Image 1: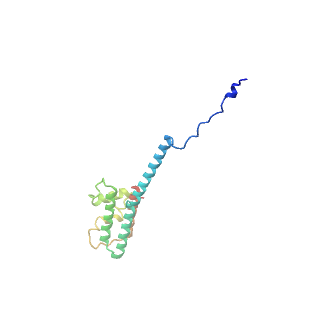
Image 2: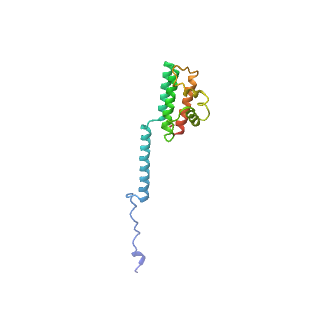
Image 3: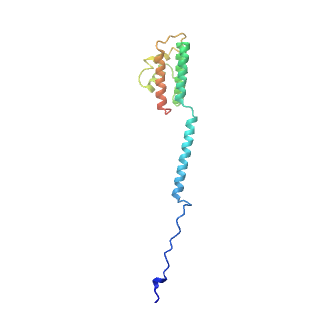
Length: 162
């Protein structure tokens, strides 16, 4: 007898799926990962080579304090602290007229950024005149230096200079 089932051939499986070339989704994922890695490397490299304003400002403050311990000149201390505050302020707030501020307006602006009235009514008041009068005796130079340090740390932290 002619059995039609006997004439059937065995099932042929398709060849296994090749790993190459990958599907379009894998190409997209690879591009995203590669782009993210390039972005991270560029960002880290920029951060490592860019000057850290907070670090540099605090180092300058330490140098001013060290110099103060040796020369004990109140007017020089006040002038150097005022110049440091102004340099940092100009760097952090380029859109404002920080360079042109003088007198009480300058102290008010510093107080705004710090919060409180330590510049206008406290130790920072010496910045108005002490830098311009020779032989000024500062009663509490450590308070003025500490106030400057607090201001520098606060504004650089808020500006993202950790």
